[in-house]
Image (cartoon, rainbow, N blue to C red):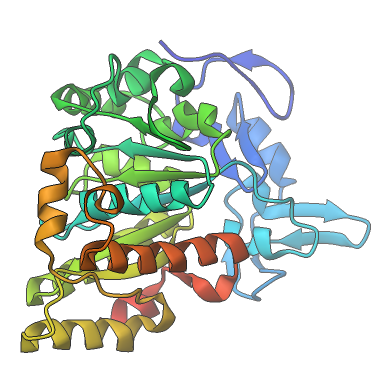
Length: 358
């Protein structure tokens, strides 16, 4: 059953049924009861204009791309440019980090758990969301919620009711095999790529939300990427992992271009690194050359990282003096610095240049 909304132009109440009736911008979501109202917000301007911030020529498609003020109208080709404007509204809610890679076996769950736990130990209030139907986050931390992400997505349960506190400042929204059924629900929704974004409005009380994505390009992952503002990409030190990174960059660029939701690479994390192996060194050097400062410290292959889930602990609890704990502490330090400073130099816009770099 669709949720009733109020038109942002005429104030009429209606039930959204089509994709054009939802429009996400830096200042929030706008709703239009009809195409007439959407066109009215645009002010009738449909010709190509130049972006006020970056100068890129583009054709107006959304109302948020036009802002009128005392100095006249300004135009923004993307939400990133809107946020870069001198009078842009401050960012609202938590920083949202998707841990994502098309390739399996790269350490996504291990990275998501330990980055979330490390941020929590630094005093940030963190929510870790398991977007993988395998439910490995809950298994690794020894927690099983009475309700899961399925109940939030499909039944509309509030995040605060479903999230399970597991450590100080650290809550988890678990999942299980029932989450696979949520794909059918999402497919039937008019805003099928934005449902997670709407459902997680109750997570605004957190400083950071970390999403552990599955190794696929599913509707669930599309929802995760449309909710996230940045992506952390774990890359195992093998040749096929480099192919996976290129696919990731292409996917993020498509989310930016086709779904009109800019996503930025927060960092690339080399995992299972072994300095004794030539291939591992070559992969790490390639990532450093292509991504520069966005290539975070490598996480060495470490048996303690494999054993920690069996003990239902993070690496910082299970083996705080291990190489795994040392390496993930360095990753968390870089991530925390980027989130605190929020410098554009610490993220990379996902575009054709980034894809060509690999």
